[in-house]
Length: 139
Image 1 (cartoon, rainbow, N blue to C red):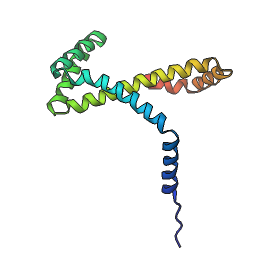
Image 2 (spheres, rainbow, N blue to C red):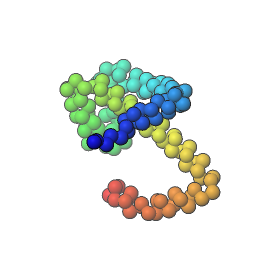
Image 3 (cartoon, helix red, strand yellow):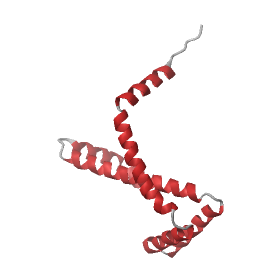
C-alpha cells in the first residue's frame, strides 16, 4: 500500500480558482507591465549599440567616475561580442520596470501605513531588530 497525497491536483485547482477569480486584475497588471516594458525596451533596442554604450559610459563617468565608465564600456562590449545584446537589453528593461513598480508600491504602502495606528511601532521594532544585519550588508 502506498500513500499518495494529491498535492499537485489541489495546487492546480487552487491556481485555476485564483486565475478565474482574479483574471481581470491579472490582465490589467499584465497590460500595464507590458506597456511599461515596451516603453523602456524600445530606447534600449532601437539605437545602434555604440550609441547605447556611449550613453551608459557617459552616465557611468558622470555618476561614478572614469573607472566605472571604462568598466561599463568593457562590459557592454563583451555582451555585444558574444551576441547577447538583445537579451541583455531585454533583461535590463525588465529590471528597470520591476524596480520602478516596486518602488512606487513600497512608497504607497509606506505612506498609507504611516497613518495607521501601531504601524510605526511595528516598523521601528523590525528595523531595530534587523539593523545590524542590514548594516552588515552595506559594510
